[in-house]
Image (cartoon, rainbow, N blue to C red; front, top):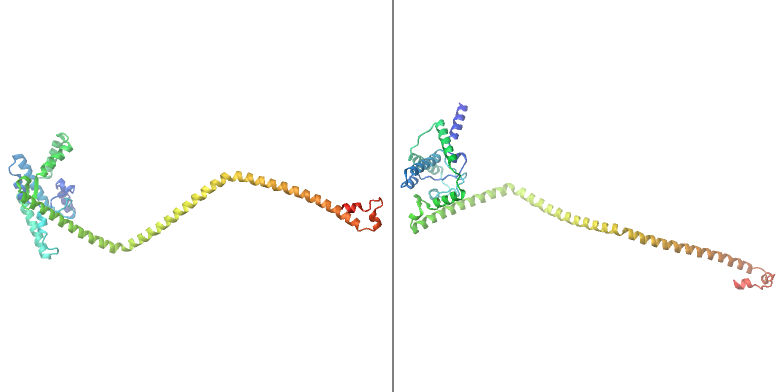
Length: 313
């Protein structure tokens, strides 16, 4: 039984329109009566297509109600819905149930305005194949011309509490009133979304406050480490520049040191020779002094010099 229900659910999902399958934006409120009044006055073919389109939109809204928070149709709030939601922020369960039942009844009434014939799966597939073939036979549309035609078509319509009406059919006062309703609806939706965002931000600050403080502390520590790293890199660059300059000047400095060493060595050798000569002279002087300390007769010398060597000394 569960498998049968699953298959039936899959078939039901497969029978949905392309708008539902692709989760395209849909109107929150559907006023089928006003839309059908807008179809009046055209030719039979366009009227039939428009009527079928209104019926499909109404049935999709009844069978698969639009959830405003999941919808992507701009503000997700029509004038009818905005007017209905202006009274009170928090309502009781009974009022909410009554409101939900009223919406359901309105959707049922809108869907019942257009006759609907249930098609089998084979007929539905044949219709899809026929539409695909017809589309394939059409020439490729010019995107720019299509966009211009779409703007011209949609610019002529204005959403009013009574449905979509031609802009030219409204007086200046009516147009200003409708635009004011649009502005009020947009402002109300924006205020609700801002309040919701503030609540989400408050919850996030409660749940993530500790992590945010840790993140700030880590960010400060990272900035401090980054500053130290930059200073270290600067010092490293300076040392590398000095090392390169020293390596470049090293041969010249070695040559100068070698020249200074040779000069000192030569001076030392000269001093050693002078010292050796002084030592020799000192020995001679010492010898003369030793001779001067001899007896007087010996001091006059046997050769008659009368101590000339001592006098020389």
